[in-house]
Image (cartoon, rainbow, N blue to C red; front, side, top):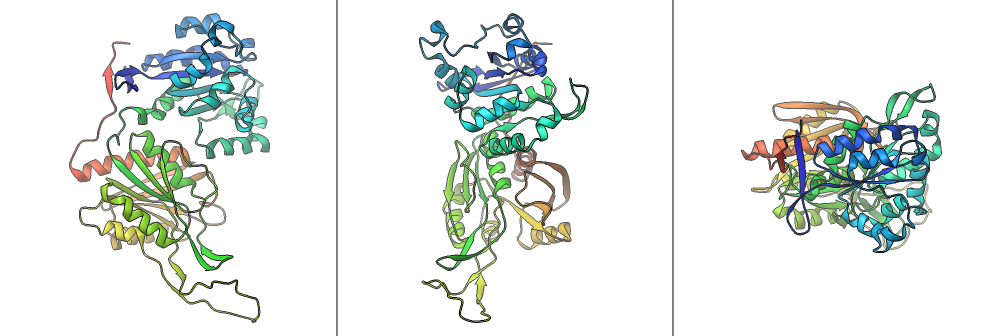
Length: 426
């Protein structure tokens, strides 16, 4: 059995600290098994229960499997004498809520903190993950889906839900993932605090669109939400990399713990990239950079006086090709967003720009843009690997792992392994 460890602030090896929040859903009956799975992997688990959770599972059982007193009361005079809700927030390497009800998801979105668990969620800087569990109609409700979207945009990890039979006798999406699946995902979230595949490596990622000004109120742009690039940045950081995210204008919160450089135009992105990429090991170009810009920028708003008008366009700098052309440059990965002949155009881009890898995806009115899901085909000189449709956050984790392994293969070195010790737990 593999046991995962991380480095503490004192640079000593210590087990991963997990705050497990249990809320009032029928799936709470799986909590003892989840605790066991987390502890088998080397986790120290501190359980925090809501009042509703106590209707489904007893604190006695959970204390027995966790080996720690259960916390549930924000106003516990002895526990709170030293502001231990803050201590727990700082102690945690990961905060996991499983099961996560629609109610607790809504509270986190709104920033409400009426109890110990939601107070910890506000006070922690650790990665936060929620494993939803509810009736399939509740899960598909627009309010719940809106909350899910906000959580993901804030960098909170959504684990599941699964699809299957539910306690109500119905079938659909809303079933909590199995404990072993959740445990595996949780330990992936905190590898950035210890030893991941990219520990000690610098990764530069571009994301979002660029804007090429016509006049003070108009511009030319590409359609891009930046979600895939931001997900790639979070995934690289989770694998231990030092990440610089060069972002065009997007409506996304900055990922915690990642250096973000905001730019507007293709020229801005070119300059920021070459400022940062000199010491980079890997460069991932996920941005939708404009190919052309107006040859002339008007200082005043163009008035609607003529029946027609034309704008002369000139080429923007090719950020991706310029990085790939660097002597002793980084391992370079491009994206190819195409509406037709996706693989053919991607292979042509791979060859013409001398890239190490390219990630091809079809885009259009019904896919790719502004969505939370994506499907891609990763192509390199002598191979390819297809990834079926999945959440961009999940897809990014798989892509970063694949890129990391190809990076080490290209350099002729072994990947930096996750720091592990072999446990005698059977």
